[in-house]
Image (cartoon, rainbow, N blue to C red; front, top):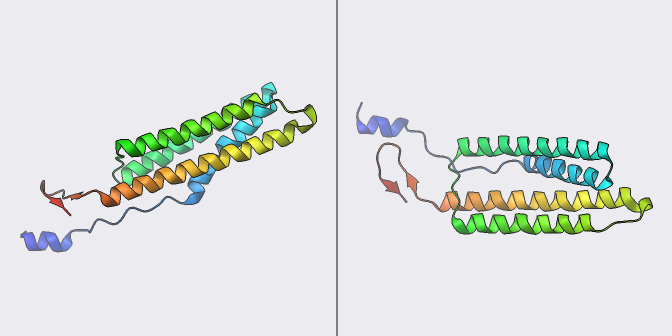
Length: 152
């Protein structure tokens, strides 16, 4: 087989695609629901919250495993630092929410508001992380599998 034949049958590398928003929404929704149920404070709700948070971890792991199999997933130090800072800010907000004790009559509404805040924050973080990943993948030089040449 000549080089011309192998080049003509080569499959061009496609641009990486974004994951659907529903994938990130499902993870953020599970985390938000778990957080909201935990805010209710009953032992049963704590148990359900732990199950929901575990389900969120499993879904996130599946999404990340699929992401790594589809494309390179290498982030620069600055992108990892920015992601870490966003997560820490969300944790601080969630911690602040847990420190407030609402009146008993408002506890369900407070739990719902806390769940929505954490879910929205988690969704924004996941979308920003993926945007940074795609930006870095598009900017990285492409390495050919046939040899060690770096293509622009």
